[in-house]
Image (cartoon, rainbow, N blue to C red; front, top):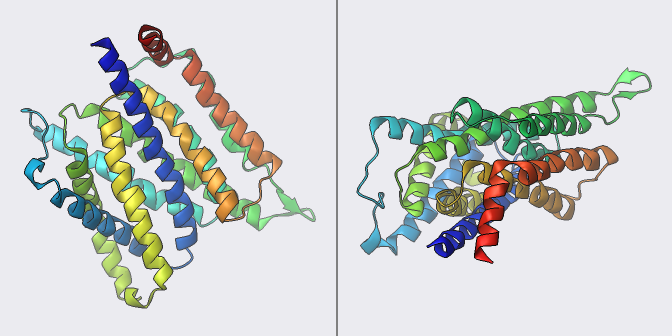
Length: 323
């Protein structure tokens, strides 16, 4: 029985790592798309593509097509939490971080996303009533230092305030604020105890976000003809819908059911690594010493949190028992 639990736990870890790697892909693709179309048009397109893709996948599951995997059903409170989860990790997170990305780099977005584990630890303390220990406080300090390092570029040019530095600071601050709803996504996901089908759940989450973004998208449709958009916008929007709108929720919903909240938080360390790597390869973004230092601080917070938190002891116990 313990061996089966270990197998399920490690499978959940792998599934969460895959899901978080898709967030890095999402950051890179959206950095390119933001110069091509209005923000809410892009959001609506990605969620509609997500709905279509998951609906197509679900057709092959028709004999097994069901939302609930157990006899338990959502209460009214569960539905409220579920909707908040869907919008937090969907429209709220994507709108805020894409708004901030207009004035910063994709690699900075990836690095700032390393703050998610610390934010999850804070929200777990206030919402899930999990203890906030000294190691969490130390990790918070490291994250603050790391994010601050991203803004220690050239503050002035010829003794004048550098406008680009000011815009990047504002952009980084907005991106950091986006990590709040992204962290709450994990908290709300752990609050929902009823097991549901990952594919059908992902389909519903995409539909809820598409429904939420629709009025804003319709406003911009009066100003732009979406059929006149470059074909690359459609292709990349489809890719965003595939990776972040469909596959992310499938792997995330499968993985989060097998692991604890803090382990899920620590696995978000995959995001800055994938985002920074892809931004260097595809966007040709330069890496400065402050970028490296910022990444070191935030990744150090993840490492310390993983090594010294109680969840790491649980993982070590599972590993030893498996051996």
